[in-house]
Image 1: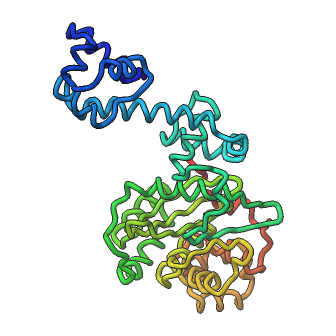
Image 2: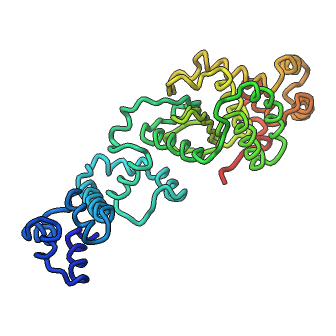
Image 3: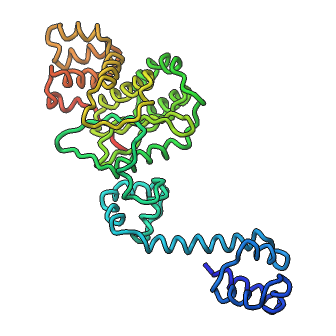
Length: 351
């Protein structure tokens, strides 16, 4: 962008006015005009007001100066970016590429520009400070010895959830009674196409004051569910299809709904080491009982040959769930091995 002084000289050339005449018209010295035109000084607010009487308006000149200053500051920022921030582009590569795909960032630029774009998307002036931020959201995670949490990816994933739910309109407050009354309706959606089911869940939860979205998962953020109350008071609920198992998706959905009904979303925590705390156990119990009546399940377990596929299918019809829900429950409770009936496990793929 041109220095404001260059633009001022162009105005003088067009009008045929000399620097001396402009100095007289604006009540400053000719030397002052020269320092601006030569790029040695900027246009102050006071001088912009004076120029406003001669050329264009005050706002025009203040805007020219402001845009020039912002561009110079941006250039200086890029030059001052540390190697520590540049190195963070590697662990953030996958989610950064997704930000580009979603239009939150643009590509075909250098590392410094990418850092500055990430700062803007993630709402932080220095990426290296991310681990110091206290999270204000509740997560559900499934960890194994092979899974690690990357604080930078996790932070970026949380921001992705916020951006993916920004445009979802919901009621001003959470209506827990309306949510309770819609549980059966939500549960019935497992019988249709998952893409249509997600759309219907989104509509139902929006009526209850909840912005719901299924969000892509990334290595380093082993999250299945996420709840956060936004600064505007909107409740955000996001799920992933990490692991791809359909039974886990529906269990996680009702697990998170339990947290909402119990008010757990007001807790400020991310606890990956003790996900079996009391609140988690209560939510697990609610999810399991919502999917399959505990009384029906108890009788089924005590019945003969509860692990045969024909019996699983028959019981699923009685329990009003898909067979994959019963299969997942039997595997989770140890009545079947996770390797049993591999061809019967329904998986959801990210589209």
